[in-house]
Amino acid sequence: MNYLISIVGLIVVLGLAWIASNNRKEIKIRPIIQMLILQVILTFLLLNTKFGLILIKGIAAGFEKLLDFANEGINFVFGGLANEGQAPFFLTALLPIVFISVLIGILQHIKVLPFIMKWLGWVISKVNGMGKLESYNGVASAIVGQSEVFITVKKQLGQLSPQRLYTLSASAMSTVSMSIVGAYMTMIEPRYVVTAIVINLFGGFIIASIINPYTVTEEEDLLVVQSEKQSFFEMLGEYILDGFKVVIIVAAMLIGFVALMAGVNTLFDMIFGISFQEIMGYVFAPFAILMGIPVSESVTAGGIMATKLITNEFVAMLSLNELASNLSERSIGIISVFLVSFANFSSIGIISGAVKGLHEQQGNVVARFGLKLLYGATLVSVLSAIIVSFIL
Image (tube, rainbow, N blue to C red):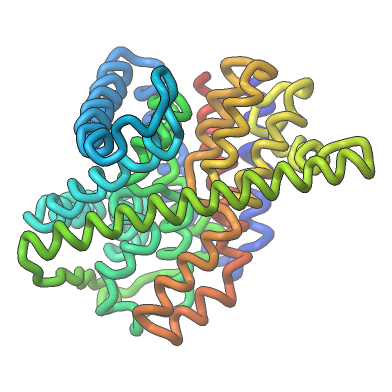
């Protein structure tokens, strides 16, 4: 029965993408099928094999060690701030982002990351049927982040058609940056974080291939990666400050959104006898069911999904932890994968702002298709959750 629901869910998601397609005749079926099969294989390897278990344990252990290193700096500055036995979310989950941001900067500076992103993107371009730029951008988005990735390709921004710009923006919104992966791993199981990062990459290409199909000519299929010349210590200072800005922005958004959600829930409860989150749970419940969530748990899951879309994934992960006792292990795994992406309303402003800062006209183009961008990125999250439901 679970397989049947997952198959129906897959058909519905691809159908919703097809309805929004701007050129259905251009849709290339073969690369889409290849990527769907690859998603299932990778998910099985990561979640159901000894190799996957060893790999994820290794990655989780690596991030745990990085968090330990980060805590050395955090304890030096904030030592004694927390009471014995307490672990404030700001200190344990958010501040380590600063250290991981520095590591990314170092790997960028010594040309390790550009090399990995370029050649991994080239390999993926042979599978997805897209251009080198699109494939590179998908990999780069998952490493450096949804706004920073555009800096690496800023020389080409002004020459891109709206179709190619949509695909680049969709990849950025469908993935998450490595700098905050450690924070996610303190909130949900690392195996779901790693799995979501891998399959979201291909899910972004699948949905973009349906909603926004086009063909890149050999003349257009160029990849010009921008590399800023900085001294090592200039780079360190920049990435330290960038990481801290991310921490402050995420913390501020959490304070605002969590407080707002609590206020709105209370207001709705007083007026209607049901919280806003529960109402949205009913709206999203059908999608939760299509993702393989049991009907009895679908409203709870739908509320968490809605929270992610309206606020952000951090608020939704906190909500998942609060409501985990009402959900089965399988449902928690499916929802966890759904939550690992930047698909929410605030990302429209972040991405269009990032592009506008580099090229004003192209930033306006991104803003105009912002809702369609969010629509596609949300379908990517649902698709990844459905793929995982086949395996769990």
